[in-house]
Image 1 (cartoon, one colour):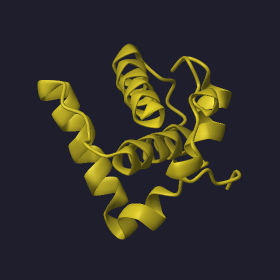
Image 2 (cartoon, helix red, strand yellow):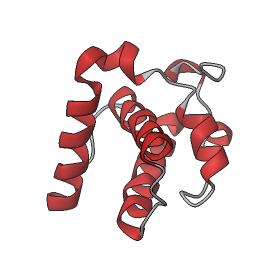
Image 3 (cartoon, helix red, strand yellow):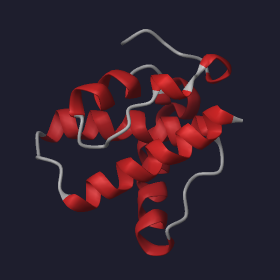
Image 4 (cartoon, one colour):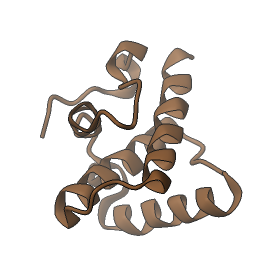
Length: 105
């Protein structure tokens, strides 16, 4: 795992600007352990979050949940080796933007 960045120490500069920068997304996503946050439910919760986003545009309400979703998505991309499509990129960009807004508070 990359160097962990606790939410309290997260800065806007830590967050990749673009969902298309896969190396930066991977490195940043691994700075938070989604399994430590959600445990065995990480995949299920991340899947429910992306489904809600696709249906309603709703995003997770907490910074930790947003980061756990990003953590899960980088793993999915790594394990499936399926190139990102526009729908995935839109989801990731929404996560990044919401994480950035959370880090600015």
